[in-house]
Length: 73
Image (tube, helix red, strand yellow):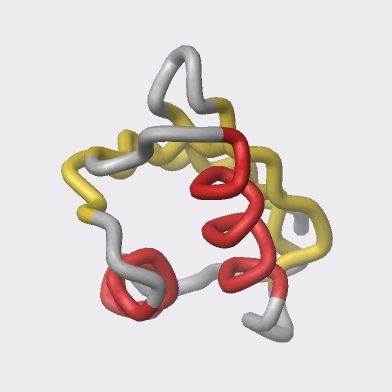
């Protein structure tokens, strides 16, 4: 079962910020796809199975940004 997750991220200033977050999210084994937009300050993640909010938060905060919202579909 695929899960689509929308993330609201604060602290990005440039395109390289967005790609750092994408790289960090993609290191989580369950995540198959991760796209982060600097313009909308949002990230879109597609996971193979359920993933904890804590795991997502850690991946974003590890590279220096703040995860302020998570919406799972």
